[in-house]
Image (cartoon, rainbow, N blue to C red; front, side, top):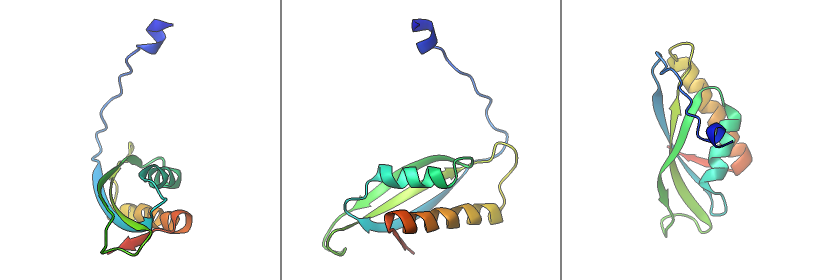
Length: 108
């Protein structure tokens, strides 16, 4: 049992590049980063490799009951280099689902 728990898995490094996209949004104060991350991964689990928060702002410059998140998405396809069109499509799906599910307002 201990051997199974401590087994190291090796995975070949992809020969296709990963890329990052940032997205800033306004959400209700009750929405957590984990909520946003879950929505993103449910939207596109094949290409999203990581979602990180790099800024959270709550303050008097925002409407009451709101907070701002800035997220970084790492995307990568294991079988090909992603095109701009594919990247834009994935990001539009993420934006749509964040707006529908978490009532996120994308900040441009």
